[in-house]
Image (cartoon, rainbow, N blue to C red; front, side, top):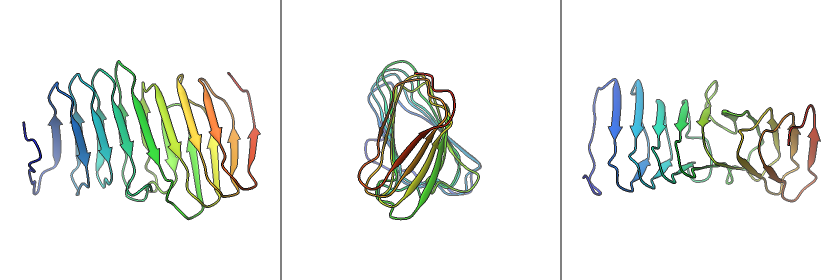
Length: 193
């Protein structure tokens, strides 16, 4: 049990962290150039806060009701490598926030992956088996494509920009709050409620 203590690492190629079976709060404030990082939590209600990554990172949340928060000061600019989140049984929530971003952004969502929104070029956030996915967009104009969704609930919230949403298919309950501004929502394919 490390409580609030810290461990430093230098010149390693991979880091694997196995958390306890108690309720954990795991903060990833930053990563350096590790080859891979994997965090595995136990079977309790855990909270993951991912602020900045520059190495491929995998989270395995274990059972129970877990929450994964992904942002750095409400933007995606510090997510510069691939992030993969595996949730398991229980009611799990993933919160992704670009809400403080004041620049034009594009984003694409599929049933397992989010790209764009300032996430590093050629990188993405992948997610599996979550019950609730919340995505917050920035204050400027956004162009967001929903190619597909996971089978459970997805909430997409924007703000005051002139936003464009293109929806191809959905597989679960999908809510879009476009905020203020002149917004456009287009269904561009087979819609599967």
